Amino acid sequence: MNYFLKRGVKLQFFATFAWALLLSSCATTISYAPAGGGDPQLKKDHYISYDNEEFGYRKWLPQSAGKKDPALVIIGVHGISGHSGDYKNLADYLIKKRHDVALYAAETRGQGMDTRRQRRGDIRRVEQWYNDLDTFTGLVREKHPKSKIIWFGESMGSLIVMHAYHYLAQERRPFAMAISSPIIEVDSELPPWKLAAAKCAALFFPVARISLESLSDGRRPVVTEDDNHEQQAAKNEWYIQRYTLRLLVKLGDLAQSMDAAASTVSCPVLVLHGGKDVFTQQDKVNDFCRNFDSLVSSTHHYYPGSYHLLMYDHQKERIFADISSWLNQHLDSFDGSK
Image (cartoon, rainbow, N blue to C red; front, top):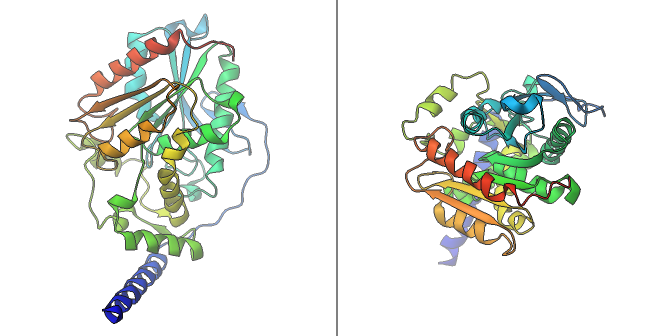
C-alpha cells in the first residue's frame, strides 16, 4: 500500500514537472525596461501614470458636466482580455437615465490596449495595478473635486479594486465600490496538478507565456447567454492569446485572498453575480460577502439566469437599474468631505 502510494506521489510529481517543462518550452518570453518616475497628468484621451507610463482611457459625462461636477464619478476597471470600452453599456444607461453620474474607465497595464505591446499579457508586480488606479483616481479627483468617487471592478477588475483598497491609505480610497462577477477561487476550476505545474514553471520561467485554454483543457467558457461577445473577443485588437505565467499565478493568489481583502473594507459595497457564472460559484460569492464587516453597508444582487459578463448579458438592463438604485440608496450618505 505504502509502495503504491509513494509511487503515485512520484508519478504525480514527474507529471507536474513534465508539464512545467512543456509549458516553458512551448511558451514565448518577453523583456522590457521599466519606465522611470514621471509627473502624472490627465490628457484628453490618455493619462500619464506614476512611473511615466501612458495609458488610454474613456469617459462618459452627463450633459451638465460643463456647468458643475457630477455628484458621483464611477471609475471602471475592466477584466482580463478586456478594455475600457467594456463599460460603454453601463455608461450609456446611466447617462440616459441620470444627470448626476459620470464614468471613467482606463486601460489596464498589461492588458490588450496597453501602449507597450510587448507588455500585453504580463505584469511585473500587482502593486503596479494598485498604483495606476491610485494615480488615475487622483487625477479624476482633481478634475472633479466636488464629486464622490466609486470604484467599479469587473471580473479581474474586482481583484484589482479589492486589493488596491486594502493597499492604499484611507484618504486615497473611494467612497464606495461595486464588484461585478468577482473572481474568488480558481483552484476548484482547474486540475490541481496543472496549478502546481504553472506555479513551479513560474518560478523558473516567470515571463513564459501560455494560453488560458492550455490550463483548462481547451474548454471555452460560455460568458453570455448567446455567447456572441466571447466569439467576437478573439477578433478584437485587444484580445490576448497568451499570458505570462507570473501574471496568471498572481491572479490566482489575488483570487485566493479575496475573502481576507473583504474584511478590510469600510465603505459601501455592491456585489453583482450571475448564477451561470462559470468562474465563480454562488456559494463562494456568498461566503465572500459574509466577510464584509457587519457595520459595512453591503448589497448583494444575484441573477440566477445570467452569465459572467453581466454588462453584455441578456439581463443587463435590470442589472443597470439595480446599480442605479444602489447609487440612489447611498448618494445622501456620502459626506462629500473628500
